[in-house]
Image (cartoon, rainbow, N blue to C red; front, side, top):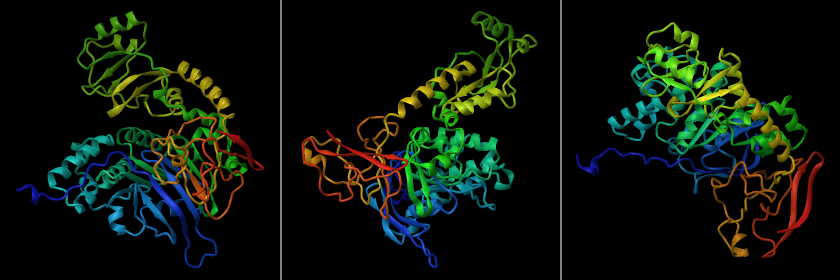
Length: 490
């Protein structure tokens, strides 16, 4: 077969693409108020943005307008540098992954057939589809040989949700939309799926927009959180640590709920702290040799790994004295936590562990080290210190119609102030600069909300920059009584 007759394929996406909702409004027939009212929201490429708010506030409507399952009444949708408001909706949806509760799998199709739906629509070759199915099953920690030919009814709820994520990633889309993906599973499974999603995102770096009612989930998963009120009006759009440390107003405080200080423990990942080393052994090793190494290191346990460095067992010294050779049978319910899991999750795992510690795994569940209670206590102290420092650096609050962002590469004052629409993928979501940060922008064109104000970095006119080279303009921050601004020269 000549190269010209090969079935069309889709180029592999390099990470995610930015998304811009530009003054988007959605009015449903028979309703007095719009479901989404003049929303302008920029979502950075390769980041996870969580949409939270009370029931009926427009979160899911906003999500579905991104892939145009719901058509906006006015406004435009921009994906990367492309305005996708008027292109064919089916075409657009094949380029955007979509995950719903319980996975939404077709019950009459096997796992492989469910995953391969979009690649088949795009004309991928059969061998490429087969390889992609196996690759994605490995990605979501399911053995292809075991699960490829199963039907949804033969899977647990958590496994169905993993297959739903794999199907959404099948054509390697730059954007993944998820509508309360973990709302239909039990709390233990939900935590594991959240950890799995964090691990997957570390590998694929897609742009993810996730709707949730669970603020703890938003803090755990999100690089950015949008807090909506009715009509999808933005009350606060910021990083999780900023929202916890400086809620914009009483509405946000009430939505966060009690225990905001403890929730800050979820902002630190297991991979951010130093892990303890462990004595490593393999199935087939002589138990007396492992005991000798344990005694020499002063440890109480050994970690038994398989051929892919995944934890199989975690026997104590006493258990090893009863063995001659290390076996290969996995121990059920090992206290294992992923490196991208939060310290809060690690603490929960350790509390049910007889060792008072947990095993930490990384990519493809490979063993990295051990985390213990002492490490957690040190981290709690550090988180409290950081939260106190963050309180002095309130981020800029904006509520404008358009996005005009300074070009960080420009040296000329006028050029730097040229209004532009661009991705903020390169901007740090954890920035703590005292100057107004170049950050993802969320705004509603309809009105100014309490705790938000126009700012010179995001001008509503989008056309007239301050005088160059040292403009004097107001710097604004949200307060409980409104916006507080001061004139500051740069």
